[in-house]
Length: 77
Image 1 (cartoon, rainbow, N blue to C red):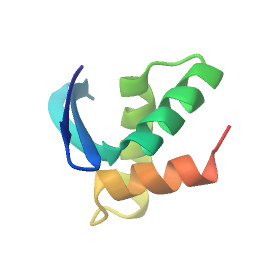
Image 2 (cartoon, rainbow, N blue to C red; image 1 turned 135 degrees about the horizontal axis):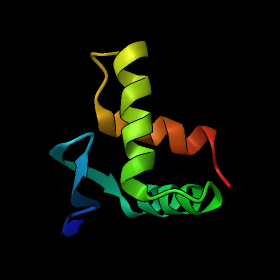
Image 3 (cartoon, rainbow, N blue to C red; image 1 turned 90 degrees about the vertical axis):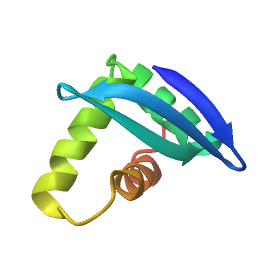
């Protein structure tokens, strides 16, 4: 996983479900995701893949970044 910062967003690249993808989120959301992943004993890419799978079924037109933000807000540890 690689990370770059652009203004208030931090962009990270990773492999999700067999393909490379980049995701740009505010640092607070990355921190929240990392806490949730640790609490569930899973990796960040695995957690994001799960969010992506749920998003694809429920709201395929929604962006992954939006789905991740909502997930973090709903699952704060």
